[in-house]
Every structure is written in structure tokens, then in C-alpha cells.
Length: 330
Image (tube, rainbow, N blue to C red; front, side, top):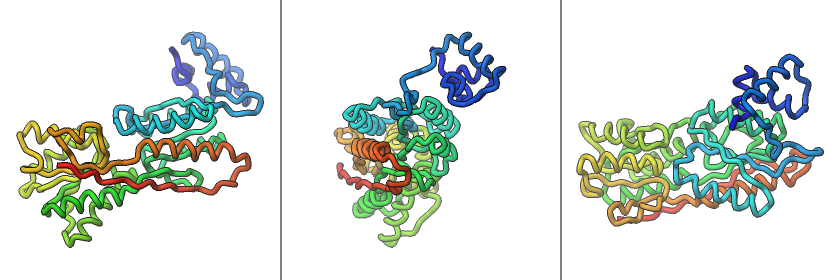
């Protein structure tokens, strides 16, 4: 089925122009409007009416934009959002940015064109200019899991510094001194704050920070694989690793398994993010567990608070920080 993006591409115009043609919200040059209609007819595009503004009232649809639909972390987060939305009479449109700022912007344009009532966003980076599109269309937005640099956007987060610090101190308390870290991109608050927690733990224990033991990259399995190989190739490889999320942990475990290395005999591991398999006897990985469902449900409740406030500016920006917990296993 053709989408509004397909029509915009075929007609050589922006998504918002296509939206204006079919919604009649603003004047569009008749020549361009005809080109858009022709493209829509060729593609058999049917304009969505579910999320439009009707008689001055916004829709009952919320947009939810996450960064990696394959990450189990987001399963519970999405469920938290959807449960609250459904309970309050809203439906949810789920979008996946793949950690790609361009794809993220395209989805933000789509959500604005469809005039969703509000949006919840896991941003690909802290500075995201496309957020201004939500403000332009007067669509309230809440950031979840990561911050954005915007004074008008609420945020629902986990205390990443605390979680990382506790994880690394756990390794130190077990006698490890040369500890490596593989975390996410420093353009995200999660990647940067987990590195900060690692540094604080080392400082607290009187251990020096060695940049050779620090690796960053996308929150993906491939990052865990590539960076674990690099750390193991050092002249003085680490005795233990702190891994920035569950996917990085899977990648690291793949490398250790292919090399026949045992945990913790040959290398100790601690990971951010609890996972359903972390407690298994074959792995039994110590993890920093996040209240993921509560991240989603809290973000949805905050967004609904915004929607229920008719006068702009009545609600000041709020940052809600939830506490993670260290789950110690073998």
C-alpha cells in the first residue's frame, strides 16, 4: 500500500505539501496540487483520515518513535506506552528510526502531517532540530530513555550514571582492576552517561582512567563483536568488561564463545539492561535492570497530562528519572 512518503517522492514535493493538498489546511499552487493528485492516483494512495483534526479537535492517536524495533528493551517500553494509551482511549502508531537521524526526521514529518495528538520519542541524538516540527504543529512531545536539548520537551529517563557506577564498582569489589567498557555513541545521553558512571566508579576506587580500554559505537550486536575483538587484541587486555546495553552484550558473548573463553574465569562481564536469558545457567550474567515498562507508562502519562492542559505554558518542563537496580548473578 502506498504511503504519503511515496506520493511526495513521486510528485517531487515534501510530505507536508502532500498533506496540505488532501487536508486543505493551506493554499497550494494549483499546478503542484494537480501533480500531487496525479501521483496519488498513479500509486492508488488513499489519504489517512484516522489521525486528522476534525472540527477543531485533535485525533485520538499518539505517535511513538523508537530507535531499534529488534531490541527487546523496546518491547516492554512500547507495551507500557500502549497500555496507558489504550486505557485512556488512544491508539498508538509505532515508528522505527534504526538510529538514523534522517529516517527519524522523515517519521517526525509523517506524524506531523497526520496531525497526531501527541508524540513520544526515543531520540537518535541529543541535538535533534526536527523536534521543532512538533512545536510548529503544536503537537506535544515527550522524550523517553534519552534527553533532547530542548527546553519545551519533557523527558522520562533512567539514572544511567548510577547504574553504570554500581555495575563497575561490583566488578572492582570482586577484585578486577583492568576494566574495559563498550558503550553507545556519545551523541546520546545514554552512551555518554554510562561512560560517566564508569569513570566515577574508577575514581571512587582510586583506579586510573585508561582511554585504551574505552570503546563506543551504535547500540548493536556488531559493536559488541568488533570492540570486544579490539580490546582482547591489546597488549594488556582487560580482565573484565562493562557492556553498555543488551545487544552489545550479545555481541561480546558471541566473540567469547567463538574463542572458547569462559566467564568469569577468563573474562568477567557486567551489562546494562536485564534480558530474559541473563539468568540462565549457561550465561548467568550480572546486569543493571531498568524499569523499562515504567519508562513507557510514565512517558505516556506525562504526554496525556500535556494533552489535558488546554493553556500553553501552564505545565513547565519536567524531567522524571527512574532508578535502575543491579541484579547480581554468577
